[in-house]
Length: 181
Image 1: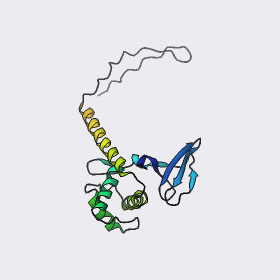
Image 2: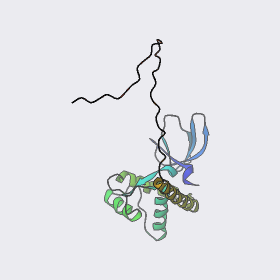
Image 3: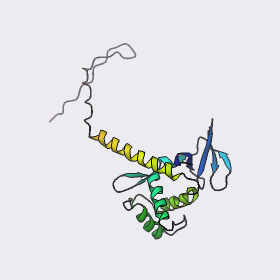
Image 4: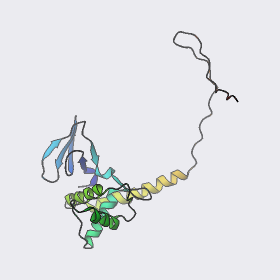
C-alpha cells in the first residue's frame, strides 16, 4: 500500500484505504477494522500523500516525515502512540523533524501523526515511500530553479475605446482621475 491510497476523513477516526469511486464519492475500507463504506460529497477527504508539515523553512511532505519515523524505529527508538502527553510528543517530534514549526504544528497534529504511523506501518510500502520522497525533492529543485527565471513581461495594454451601453448610447472611456491639490 502507498500513501496515495490512504485517506483521512474529517469526522471519522483512523485512516481508510481507497477501494474505488462511485458517483457520490469514494468507496473506503477502514484500516483498523476493515469495515467498508462510501463517502458523500459533503465529507472532507485528505489523501496522505498530499499532506505536508510546517517547518521553519517551509513545508515537508508527510512521506518524508514517516520515512524519518521509520528510520528512528529501525534504530530501536520507541515510537509514541497517539495518547502520549504533550511534552513527550514535542520532544519526539524534535527528533523526527528538528526544524518543525513549533507555532503551527500543534500537539494534536503530532499525536495524530504517531497514531497514523502505528496504523499504517504494517501495510505501508516504505520503498515506494522513499521513491516518492526522492521525486518530491527533485520537484522542489525544479520549482526553485523556475523561481529564479525571469518572469515574462505583460503585454502592452491597448488604448481604451468608447463602448456602447445596453441602450445603444456610447459611454465615455475610463481615464485615471487627476489628483487635486
